[in-house]
View (cartoon, helix red, strand yellow):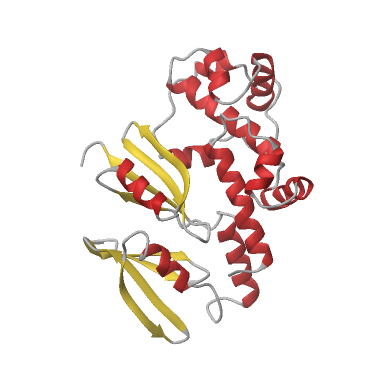
Length: 137
Length: 137
């Protein structure tokens, strides 16, 4: 239908959509490369050139974004939220969250509820920036 | 002053494939399909809302250069060209099941939201759609 670049983009978008949808599952590169119909090595390189960041980083920031949402919109425990967004270790979750957001989960929670928006827009706009790390707290 | 929003536009790289999707799968009707100079002026609307039309525009010359059209198509295919459409339905789970049965690409399964239940999907090109069953109205 379209050019090779369009077809490639569209397949990469399917892999990105899968991360937005199934972030809580243990998505690994072979699974995602399978969704995108390319080899693993090709997948990481191509995803990065299409979206400006590696799939691993995209997924981590998606999980952090969902955690930010749950912290501010629910009263679930930090441990519970860590598991719910796809982290298997509380230590990793706390470190990644702090690195990306610039403050620990318990402090972030005090910022209070987020304004309402359709979740696709919330997920597109509230995922922590890919283009600059948060300042160290 | 302004009375009504009547036509909004999205980019579709292939107008026939767009009809297969929007008419064949989502249940739209064609409201206009005519030559407008070199352009195929193609609009669709929902059966119950004929005054609210979507223009399915194929990017290309003379509206834009071939090079620009290729850039637009590439943006569409990575989900970055806008083209968000939001719909309401009576029963989100039922509509979701019907569309899934038709092979529509679901990006987010139905979720409970403060405003109702909704789910996400993409058209064949990468444009994003969201369908909601609103709690009220």
